[in-house]
Amino acid sequence: MSTLWPKILVIGKNGQIGWELQRTLAPLGQIVALDYPEIDLANPDSIRSKVHDIKPSLIVNAAAYTAVDKAEEEPELAMAVNGTAPGILAEEAQKIGAFLVHYSTDYVFDGTKTTPYTEEDEPNPINVYGATKLAGEKAIQAVNPNHLIFRTSWVYGLRGKNFLLTMLRLAKERNEIRVVDDQIGSPTWCRMVAEATALIMVQGKTPVIDKSGLYHLTAGGQTSWYGFAKSILYFKTDINTEIIPIKTCEYLTKSNRPLYSVLDNKKLQCGFNIKILDWKKSLEKVLNNN
Image 1 (cartoon, one colour):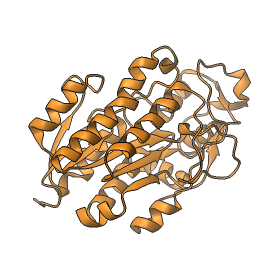
Image 2: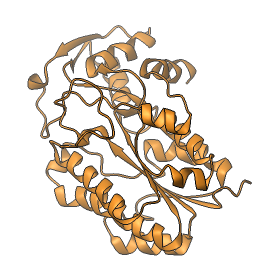
Image 3: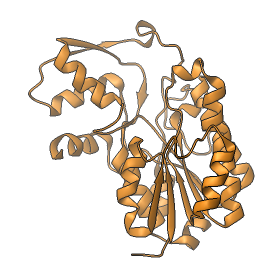
Image 4: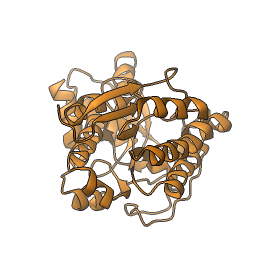
């Protein structure tokens, strides 16, 4: 067993990224994986006591309040989990000399750009979810310099709740599916996020600390939800459901979504010398190898 990171606390073990992290980080140290109710991110005392008891050398927070529409109805809970909890984790990490990895979102941006957002672009969230995730970024940055914040986007995989699984289910139930074609982003496989995280953390504590900061960790390329859906069914040749493109205004939701939220990932690829696959190549791997 490597002692690169003697004890690794993974929070959100049942989530898409958290579940994958337990496998990818296992060679780097002893994994302690938690989720609600073992740790309650809405309860500061629960966070502090768990970190104090476990005393990890690395904390990886893959937990979040991710129900974008429901967050409009539960802003306090979303803020507690997404905004306040990361700051508490940063405080506790600093107390024990642990390094903190945290995941954020493309929804911190308003979507008014037409070229990929860089880490230097000013966030301007247009929904509660994005606002709470931005608050979490700022809370970490204000407290603990030893951190990595990875913004990711349109996360999917073969377990949990996500667009890929929804499309596969609907395609078996319906002859046609109406999908928004004017929101543009980068579908990102949860396993790729976890593998990239491990490739970065294996570089060692000092190099990682030296490169602390904010990075965009998403698949390469861009598409619309409609394009994503078409590609999913392209690789699933046994399904003949028709995908019909519609505008955002034809698909009403409780929260606003950015029309363009593609993230530029060059800083991460260059800074840590890792290569990120294009979204379509990742999707092909997911659907052909599983």
